[in-house]
Image (tube, rainbow, N blue to C red):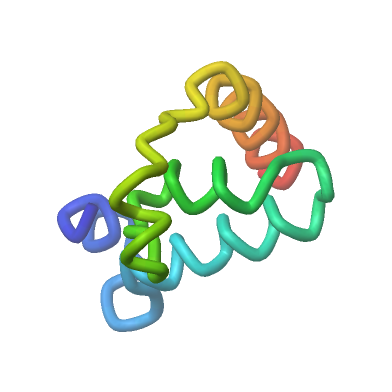
Length: 78
């Protein structure tokens, strides 16, 4: 991702975490996806250690729909 940021001319203006922040904000504000699926897609670990130890759900179907929605949204913004 860092190489892509440099290649597209955003070096010093955007970071990988900046893109993740944008994605998290847009996906959460859409109201279309569960916070658990969004966090799993962004590869964030569960903060609650007990819940993290037991919840091993991957939310794959919701994440597939989410990524299609995201691709459509990004395409619309371009």
